[in-house]
Amino acid sequence: QSDFSCDHPCNGPKNWNHANSNCDGKQQSPINIVTRKTLKDERLTPFKFDNYQQIFKGTIKNNGHSVQVGVPHLSTVSGGGLPTSYKAVQFHLHWGNNGGPGSEHTIDGEQYPMELHIVHMKHHYSDLTTALSDAEGVAVLGFFYEKSNRANGKYDPIINALRSIKNANGNTSLLPVSLAQLIPAEQNLTSYYRYKGSLTTPGCTEAVVWTLFESPIPLSIEQLRMFSELKFHSGNSMIETFRPVQPLNGRQVFRSGG
Ligand code: 1SD
Ligand code: ZN
Image (cartoon, rainbow, N blue to C red; front, side, top):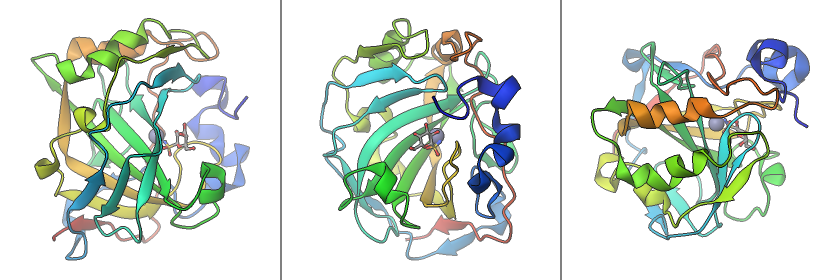
């Protein structure tokens, strides 16, 4: 059982600084991105996505604090100012209450209804634990969601599976899905923010190269609300699964410019 298994009131984000010394560090995530203070960096060129179109049959799990899908280590990302290529490990989401504010990162103070994290590790590592001992071992690609008047059919495999994993530790197989179908088209992924930070849950390890894409993913309010039907380990509704924004402590946030 993890440090935060009993969810927010008893052991949530506000108590993590006590739960784990890393959570008190100087390079924590998430952050509020103040766009006028970002620095354009010509090295932040477009990403190269390999095998993001690969369709796989994944398992979706309610891990007691989010829903997570393991990804076969075939999809890789490089370019985008990353030091090397990184392979996808898993993705998960952070959300609010019934479609209310729920993203972890905020842009000029705006909190989006949900945020997708596709967690990658440097290609030569075989597990996340090892990757986390490297200051740039992990790359998380973060995507925001926006409310749309229309349901996003590309999310049917995810949304339809949620009803089968309402309780903590529940898992079920997903209908075939690809990472590409869950994110905006590649030509809309050239505008992004970059900074060095941490995992947003304990142990809050400061080993993450963060990328937040500007272009949001549309979902209907009904689709967003389905996430609030899930339950934490405690049995309480799994809502507001985000860590509050953390101090920048002098870090520079860069924006793409390639
Ligand atoms: O919250 C997730 C956590 O569930 C786990 O996936 C971890 C990686 O081992 O990453 C954090 S986060 O920083 O991607 N939110
Ligand atoms: Zn996350």
